[in-house]
Image (cartoon, rainbow, N blue to C red; front, side, top):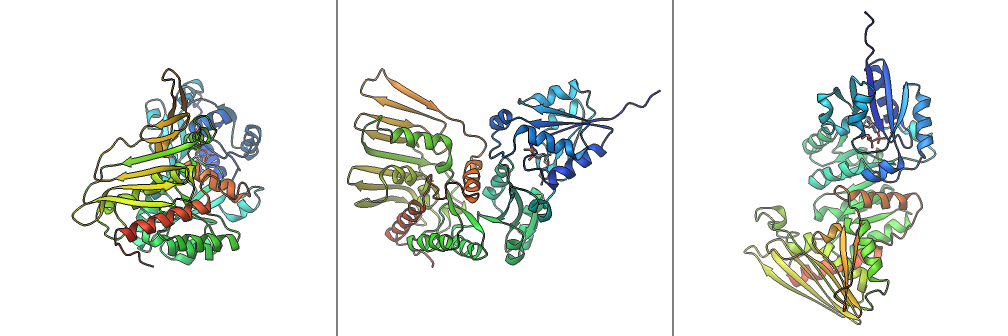
Length: 452
Ligand code: C2G
C-alpha cells in the first residue's frame, strides 16, 4: 500500500523576508513531504493588529516561493481560517515558530502541532542584504512590562527583539530563556548586539541607561515616567538630538489610535473653546507592591500621573499659571490619592490619580459648545462620546485597541527611525520635558528628595 505523504502547513506574514523566516520554512518542510504555506493578507494583518508591514502581499508570496520549500502557497485572510485549512488541505502537522507556543494548541484535536524554535539572532549579513533594515531591539529590564513589550513587538513588522539586559545575570538568563531571546548582563555586549533600546527598568535607573544607550549611538524608547527632573529630560533630548538619535517616552496612550482621534475631535472646534479638562485614573494596588512601598519613587502620581497629565498637556500645553497638588498619604508617606489642579490662561484642569482610592476613572473635556467624555479605560481609548446643549444629540466614536497597546508606540517609534515624522507629534520632547518638570514639582511639594 502506498505510504500516505505527510502534509505540513505553516503561516506567516513573511515581511522583509529574513533568515528567521527561511529557517522556519526549511524546518517546516523537513517535518513532512508536502508543505502548504499560508501568507497573511494586508486585511488579515490589519485585523489582527500586525503593524508596519512593508512588503506587498505579492512580494511576500514571491519571497516564500523563492525558498523552494513551499509545495503550495495560499493566503491567510481571516481569523479562524487555520482551523478550516487543516481539514481542507488534509493536514497532518501544523507548525509555527516557538514565539507562538501554546497559541495554536486548539488544533491538536485535528493534527499534530509543532512549535519550532524561533531564530534568536537574525544574522547581520542577512539584514545587510535587506533594502529595509530590521531594527534589532534590546530590552533593559526583565519585569512584567518587558514581557508585554515582547508580546507586542511580535506584531510589529520590521523589529526583532534580540535580547534583554539585567545586571543580575540570573534574572537576565531566566527572562531570556522564557522569551527565547539572548540574555545579557554585560552592557557592552548588549549594546553591540542591538540597534535600538527599550528601557523598562525601575524609574531611578532610567536616566543612566538612556544616557548610556544614546552614548552608544542607540535610539531609545523609555517607559514612563522617563525621568523625574525637567533638566534631565532636556539634557537627554538635547544629547539625542545632537547625535541624530530618537528618544521617545513610552506613554502608550499617546500613541493609541482612539486617543489620537479624541484629541483631534477636541481640537476640531466641534465642542468650541476648551475650558476644562478632568483626567482621572485609579487602580487599587496591593499595599505591599513596589508602587506603594518604594519611598522615593513610589506612590500614585509617579505611577499614573503620566497618563492623567497627558490630555492636559496635549490640550492646554505647558503654559500653566498655577500648579497645585493635594494628596492623601498612607502611613509610609506615599500618596494613595493625588489631585493636581492647574490654572491656564484659557481654562482649568485637574489630573487625579489613585492607587489606594477607587474613583470613576474618566476623561472629560469641556468646551464652550459641548463636551467629550471617555469612560475607563480611557487611557486605552476605544470609545468616547460628544455631548451638546441639545441632550438629544450625542456623537459616538469608537476605535480599535489591540493587545496591550504597546504595538502602537513601537510602530510610531519605528516610523520615526526610518526618517518619518521625527518630531513625534503624538508626544513631543517639550511635552515629555514638561511632564518631568511636573513630576519634579510634585516630589518637591511632597518633600521627597529626587536622587541625581
Ligand atoms: N520566525 C522565526 N524566527 C524569527 C522570526 C520569525 O522563527 N526571528 C517565525 C515565526 O515564528 C513564524 C514565521 O517565522 O512562524 C513567520 O513569522 P512572521 O512573518 O512574523 O509571522 P507571524 O506574525 O509570526 O504570524 O497567522 C500567522 C502566524 O500567526 C504567524
